[in-house]
Length: 268
Image 1 (spheres, helix red, strand yellow):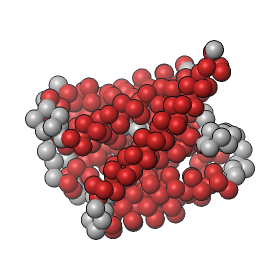
Image 2 (cartoon, rainbow, N blue to C red):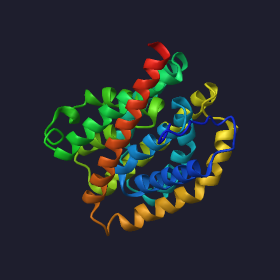
Image 3 (spheres, rainbow, N blue to C red):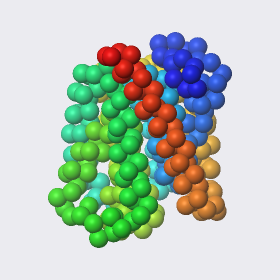
Image 4 (cartoon, rainbow, N blue to C red):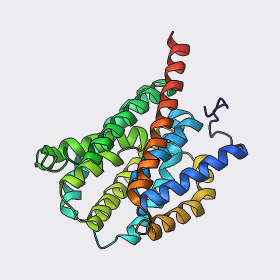
């Protein structure tokens, strides 16, 4: 729910005007986060989670993320460090499979609570990342961490589309230049998101109806991608990301509050 208004499932295309406004905002944020302002990534997840049922929100966001990935691949096509991607992808695939079985075994109330917990963990990682002390010189750069980070990223991405902060933390520990950081992240998530599609389709979380709604939002993803790429170098990115971060904190707290009420109503 958002502001006390009812959730909708996307078995029906009859979304209300206010819902399309938030869908459009989330679509623009996806484009911006993929093409130049990665700290915005979690905010679109929270928007979808506050409007749709938990599992539906994960499926609804995925096609838009893939469109954003394609835009970012064009922008950063020459900057990926494939050595890092190859180390992570097999383990991320295992994490996706683990997330597939978990999503298939839980209901929407349990999924919302699990996603809320995952987002809190990702926010904590983002705070740690901002401090940088735990990143530079930390243990994330050791070879043994790649399987752990890869599997965690795959799992969190499968259940919530929210593995961005985890990958930011890991890639910063690799001391990559900014362009290599963006390119490596983009190609990793493109492969990961494409791998997730058949699993979410099997669970009936990505559907033809949800894709139909996504098609209307593609221009906003493209617009967000242009804004992210064009203006990330012209604005105070640190201030911008911190503002988005605190908005995300508020939205996640609201989502977890609603999830707790749903759990109490369902099982109390």
